[in-house]
Image (cartoon, rainbow, N blue to C red; front, side):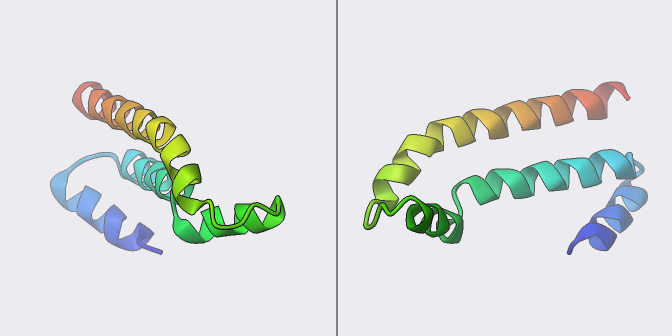
Length: 81
């Protein structure tokens, strides 16, 4: 949805368009891990109701690790590529 905006921003600041778009996709995946509509859909699939807070508390640590690793990898790639 924002690919054209992100690619224009990457071009204007002189960084790799592919890297920016890849990090955008990774960020979207990270956001989807804790998006409430995805949590509700998963709950409905396994018949586990009214447990949104518990589910999000259990996945927030993994989400933060994933986000930190993606940020570090992105930072290193920006600096050395």
